[in-house]
Structure formats: structure tokens, C-alpha cells
Image (cartoon, rainbow, N blue to C red; front, side):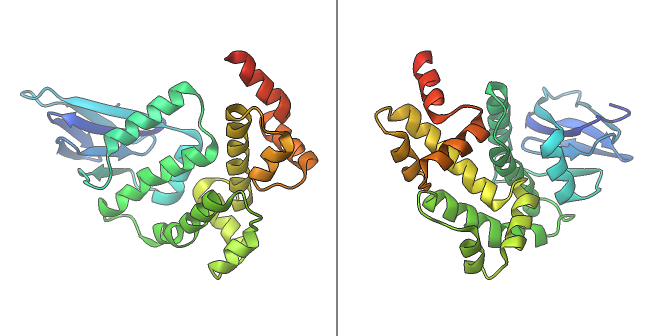
Length: 244
């Protein structure tokens, strides 16, 4: 790619070794080592003469590319060393498998994206730990509280107060790292759980389902569900049953 890939390009060595030329430099990529190059960064790579070079790669665009740009800035590339705390091949396989089946919800894609970027913290001197500290201090514990207590009457301002920050700042951090507000994240968790209950427990009434995901009013729940999914809970349940 003498003119570079138009998207972020991530390449990692599975076995053997290859030679990469980028930014006027030539380097070897051995097993477990990889490179993330920014869009339109000239990049040439090839197997070494004596090596059967097996690689995995992915090009990244859209929402995920925007998040990478936000977090790593304007660097042309990052060299990634083998990391015992993060399995790049497993991550790559998971992303490909999930995206092949159907597009992921934005918050799920955000978590995968952030896990990938966070791994650079121990592998690159270019990255400041400031942003990851904000995620670890405020976003991650809030996500955990939401996922644990979504069925209760939790309020975002209470979660922010527990962390001694304002709801507005918490919303800004969620938007920055996950692409959605904390309130939206809570709603997506509740809607996901509601769909599971509707399909897996067909005898549950709509009122009971909405109560089990932390919403009191059935009419409000139905309106939210239809807005998020394009179907009422009853139609959604019926359509899933007909497909079985």
C-alpha cells in the first residue's frame, strides 16, 4: 500500500515473521507483534525470504475509527508487542465473528474498541494514561453499577454523586468513551434484558417484564421499546416465537 490504506489498518503476526516499511523505517514483525497504521500512511509489508508469514488483519472505519482518532491523536502508526494481558488474535476473531453475524450495538462496539486501545497503554510510549484513568475512575464503575442494578430505580445523578462528579461530566465521559450517554447506556441495557425476558419467558406479562428491568409504567415501557426496536414488546415476542 504505497499510498496507504484509506482506513485504519491493523496487522498482526500469527506465525513466522515479516518485514514492514513505514515512515522511512524498516522493521520486523515477529509472532505476536503487530502494527496499527493511520489512514493514508504509506505502508509496505512482505514475508521474509525464509519465513512462512501468517497474519491477521482488519481495516477500521466509521464509529470505531473515530474513537481511535480521539484517543491516540495524530500519530501515523503504533508498533504493538506481544502482550500477556491482551490477546489480539482473540479480539480480532471476536470482532470479525460478531460483525459478520450482525452489526453490534454501539455500546458493545465501544467496549471492544476501548479494550483494544487500552492495550496500547503498556505497549506504546506515545499514549498518555490520562484518558484511560478517566475511563477506569468514572466510566467503568458506572457501567458496572448499571449492569448490576438496572432492574432497580437507579438514577444517573446518584451514580455521578457517588463518584463526586456532576451528571453532566459523567455524560460527557460516557459520550467520549462509549459514544452514548450514561442514560442511553442504561436504557440499552434495560431493552436488551427486556428482549431476553420476552423471548425466554413467554408467560411473563408485559407489565412484569417492564418491572423486572426497572421501569414501573407499562405504557412508558412500550413506548420506549418501540422507539428503540421498531416493534412493540408484544409484536417482538410474537415475531420471535414464529421464527422458532
